[in-house]
Image (tube, rainbow, N blue to C red):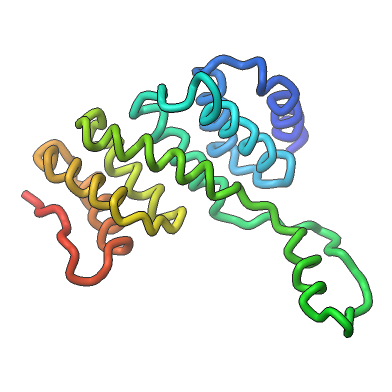
Length: 193
């Protein structure tokens, strides 16, 4: 894993100097590498911050958004836990303090980046800017991230309905599995062929 750690450290040092495509590629690579230590998660958070703030905010393509969403979903599949959790005597005067200290060892991407990606993804769905493969991947990623934004889920379903004849069987299965798990019982699910 030394090569992965070196790659992550290198990217984290230059993330603010990278272009949009380099950042998208780095996010994708971090997802593919599956290396979920603190440095990798911090690097992903920095990539998301650069891409979703300032002049790049709202200017990402549907393909770029889906790639980021997928990368974020992969990075969140396993929670990072320190090898040496904080050790202290229980605090009897403030019992909640122990849980707070223990929770500090868990690194999770701030939900604001997922929400910002979701808003942009919703606009792409409404503008029919996503391919069938991208819609299926977005749905899978939203399921993996535990999305509860009903308006976003509805936009994904509507985008899928508009392209339902373009899905191959694997994409359709991925979409239907994700959407049926995310939507509440009785909600509309795209009709198959």
